[in-house]
Image 1 (cartoon, helix red, strand yellow):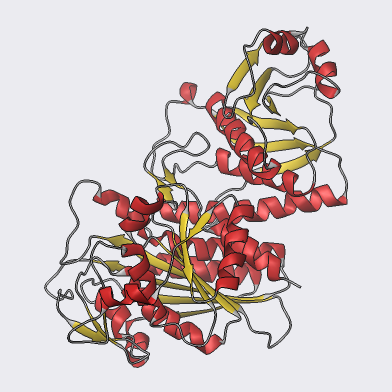
Image 2 (tube, helix red, strand yellow):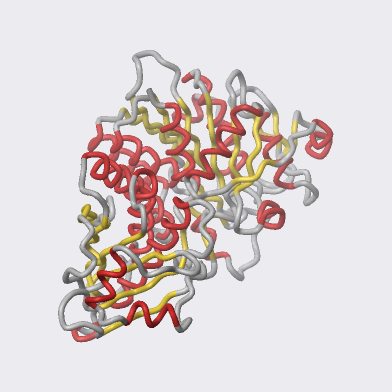
Length: 495
């Protein structure tokens, strides 16, 4: 089930050596000196001439392809601009992703990547970027004619000092890449293939390969748990809903775990409150929070982090049918709270309500949930930042810092009590929608009703989990958010 991984090795700097594609990540106003000067000699001065006459100025995402410039040495040289580098990790990660995308386009099969000072966390970021840019999903595509095929990107070299730290950084980068790749594959799969059962099987695969304990609840088990909120979403579909739990025990025995929680709506029609037909195919991405949990658990297990983590995914589909839940219905969640359902398209919070209540039994030190929860978050923050809210400001700050390290920036929204009036119900304890005003905030306040006794943060990834346009670094489709944020948060808490 795990997609094939890019094989990345450390290579001692030697830029004039043979390579099908050498990529140089350069800042704004680059200078040809040091190892670049030696390379320029091999290239007959082509690098220096291109820069001196302004053919390449190093602006962010700018590229210049130099081909056929030397008898020996690199067959192709690609210059990738990083602009004014404020933070090396994110700049190098972005440049590496662009490098890999060009390697895929050229069909070179291999890429050599160089950036000045490639070491430590910056080296790790380069590996993550290369893997992200080289990722492809072709499982449901027929092969083109043999003479039109291009080799997939299978291997890469990062030019850095080859020592134990560099090899460890590459291994960590590949672990993160495995998590991202798994999450992106699950998200990209069509809804008729990536079902709740498929997510459960993926969790079992992760568990069997890494020694994690996996528990899967179905409809009958959830009925016994009194999960009326979750089951109200699943009552319109013949597919079996699944509550998936993975337990990673890398910390001290008995130490409180970190809980990672994900919304796994494998397809969301909106139910009786049905969505418009145009663009509904994108709703296969409504399980990106759940995919992010599974991807994070894959990466965490590969890194063997010294911390206990429990991953929980609530998986089902939201379908209209004669048995589907209706606007105006009242259901009871497993914590006893009654919910008036105003809009059946506000279904993710109904699933997460029971999953968050279930998480209480693990007595987590902290819990973070991620969900493509509200279109309102896209209106508020666009496709650049994840909405971040929670019941503990110190934990919110910790998560925001992790999101920045991961290159998945978040932005905190307020959780003031005044907003609670919008989800006050006339017939139940709470209603599942307060309408359009402050829609992202009221969704988080709804979730807070089911969080009891532990610090909690909610990530609304509706605008960041997938993209409907090419992002230069990534094609249309899933981005891998929130895998990086989850992993960076857990790493910071590892012993």
